[in-house]
Length: 335
Image 1 (spheres, rainbow, N blue to C red):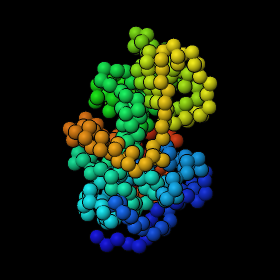
Image 2: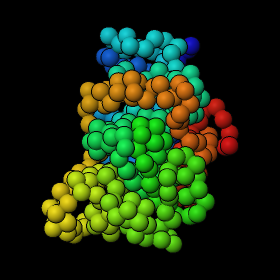
Image 3: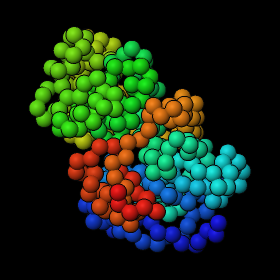
Image 4: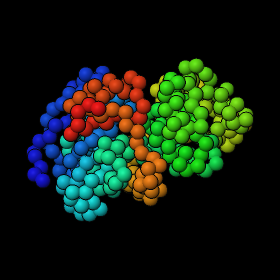
């Protein structure tokens, strides 16, 4: 394959609404030591990309200054010492930025071979969401078979992934979503019960559903007034893992409740973690989630495909009703 000198990338023309995302030209990057160059066929759209577009989530040092945290495509060049993947291999990768482009470089250890059961568009929806869920639900949150699990935003990319994985590993899954239709979608994915937060109080519903015990683990992207409600619905020795705060980062919490129920409130971000840290998650996913991809028990749920150059439309769609992942593709029209 002949690699061009320039590529199309979706660049930021300032910070603001979706309209600041504009296609432009950039040099095709050269893979450094232990890196691979991927000809991107599809890239996932994620909430952190929206925050970067708004100027609230800058890329780490050395990363491209345009958005995109997950890609899938074909390996077309190898950096010095790279040998985990070969030329022509199809991979999905977690990148620190720059995924909205026709080519992207990544540390070879942060890439995973595309499972045969997944399309390339589905594969592009794996790295950011599955890495995030695996680390926060299973590694940091310690979810075990037989426990109860609550995920807010049950029909988001993170939510649909968390429901499937928690169910597959033997947990009883609960979710919240913003409409009855979304709740039905979450329940079809494996949630025991999904609560429409616009018409019901999830604390009351889940206390009743668990016989007053509460839930063992909550994955929260909302923050704000959800924080104390998460503490209220937690079981004794329960855990709450925070990965975003759509309702704001500053809250007052009832420490008496934390102490009395022996609760753990923790959180994390993934983008700024080391290559080695992300590589360890990648190996865990290969070993423990790979078989679930192979037998069809889990896979990214795709809402809509957009051409790469229509990234602005994809971001606008993020703020509208959608279920699952929105994907940019270099080879398909909007689907």
